[in-house]
Image 1 (cartoon, rainbow, N blue to C red):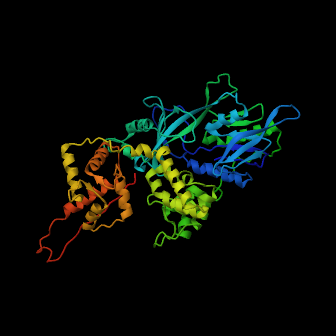
Image 2: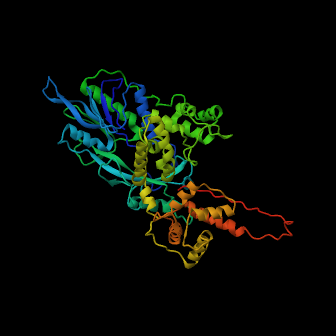
Image 3: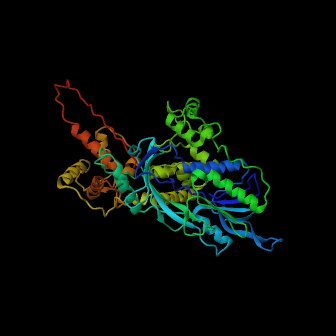
Length: 562
């Protein structure tokens, strides 16, 4: 997100790039292993947005998807030197370009710091040393709700943390030099490094202490803009604090730092702007200033949402924690469910508390694309890539209504969002755990057992099963499932995408599950549960049932979308 505008303290243009693809934990020297209450975490995307909304509330002109193409300059009549006087900007969504002029321009672009500095002076020495950090998300049962773990002494000296986050478990991170890119991609090597380190801390009760590759629900890479101080004698030394730099032409750069000191960074930067450009400004108001939604928030605010609007308790807690006192505005937009309870609040996906009203509200908060919605308004993409993909069609439909998208634009948004999930959020690495080249490493007894299960569905001995075969078995045990859901379930395992699951594909799936590369396969769970119900259906003597029929079967499948 780029923000350009006037601040109430002075006439300035602020060029910023907020990166919401990483959660960084500042590490200080600690014992080899440290457990601590996980009270300092936050929803980084929401905080980023709250800062922008708060700035707008105090008079800033904010713009999303705005790229700086070049810096504008003019000659100072008193000194004869060129001074930065604004920026040439481009609307990324429309391609339109325009100029924004200001007395002062501040470069706050994170890993893109040097890109903007070289617009000012092509010979400027680089001060940013970008480092990639990969994070993974796993089911919430891997960590306590309020306790985190940090180990600064891993096998290769990197730091590992293991924390509860958004009711899931987040683990990271790697620290690898990288090129600056707007689309960083997590590597399988880094994902496995984190998994191998985390396994050292798991209880042996967790399947022999084995954390499965298939338990990784999402993975991403963030770029940390480590900086060197250009005024330091040791220009190669990484600064652990933020750096404020002023160029000869008056461009002010704020670089480095961390979330926990962002207000101090802002105050130091604005003070430098006021002093350098002789701007008129009152005293700083950042200390004690509430961000958007914080003024009337309380820990029990969610109860009013439940009582006044008929929202589920889990949904109400999520809205209160995310939007603060603005949660009531979201609740007012919530659709009626048609159920006895909850009265309003249709979920985007069943296992997460995000509701359709958040899509409509997100558009009011600068959301322009489906990627914005699944990653930076809700956190679905960061919590479970498959759940995010399932929610995409409905999200695009809702956004299309609000933004008047035609069918071509809707399809474009779907494809772009799916590409984002596939490459940047770990879906590619996850899907590659089961391919048509996957080896089958099963014991002969296991192969016989799985073949028997497969043939309960493939009654005609065709060598493959289709939606019709699955429907036939489910109907025989009085279970109904809609055709679209069955198609999705089979498609997850249909490796050659020919509309059917062959025996070899099923054995590849079961082998991958045994190795831990795949977990929570809906087809595997469905077939196992159906087999168990079929095996329990034994003939009952007529004299014991008084000539009638007796059926005490209970069929229950819990689909884990991971």
